Length: 395
Ligand SMILES: *Cc1c(COP(=O)(O)O)cnc(C)c1O
Image 1 (spheres, rainbow, N blue to C red):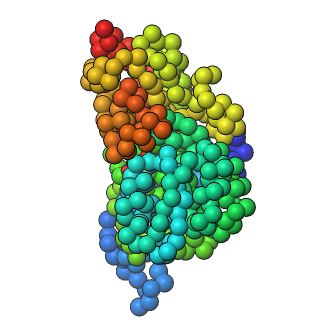
Image 2: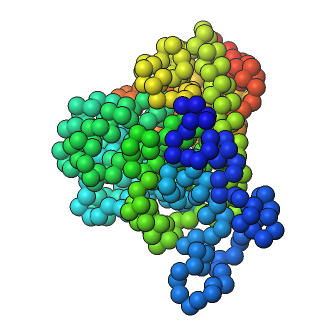
């Protein structure tokens, strides 16, 4: 989709990222940067509950500005922020009632798996984890008439793509009233807008690309459905897993460069993926922008560009792969992704360590699979760092 023909929003993506929610005319001093409002309570005019701002858990000026901007970027009528991605997921799960079923992709963020398997189940919500790449298996799983369906379009760490159009069509046909939720953290609305494909709720770990500076933990939920929006707003206030005004300010600042950051993340990732693909000490590279990618049709149809995450199999032992990771200098060995700084990790013993050996085998998480969040450094320096660390680790 071109920058000037985005659906849902008034202006193009970049313009919304910079201006949505922060019109200086809304403040008497007309500051172009939203003032940070630390007050937990507000002087109201009538002894009633009607005011827009009355108590900071319910709403506050910085969260309100940010939510307006997030909704504009997502092409949503409304968006709500939470104190982490997991707090957003937990709040979304409160749309369910004891006895309800959830069908969730088996290849989902580890924390989402943990939440549904060990936490939501305590409230009587039963989750079935199923392979979303095989629509026949998904169709069978939908026999339980789930109230919620949860998946990611680009999965972690093997960067496989879910056919969002196929999944939405199947769920709408078999279970018309199921809430379809997409975790869009790996892509951001710059690369894909799930609401354009008819899903009900888009969830983000804002902690990653959306904030982009590895200094805020936050989550969000966005929707076009007013009934769902009213419930999310209620649960945001009632459960209270809300972000601070300062964190909202920080994220609003980060969003202003979302488009240019993402463009550079994608171009750096492409360069690093191509470098690794030609490297004698690399077995295989997983990146949607490479000709060798396993699902080129889906990648080209759904994605504006191919993202900032690159995974690869080192040609060596598990021990040599660990040494390689420790040898990296510019790239840090660490959890998380989506920041301006490059990060590498070993999914089998880090992000995906809680999976059983069979589950790791099923999705291709071996002890030589490395996940790279390609940052905004010069891609030539990143390639040199990878090359040096590989050559000193593998003999
Ligand atoms: C990090 C992440 C989450 C959880 O978000 P937090 O902000 O860490 O709570 C959820 N989904 C995906 C895909 C993530 O990468």
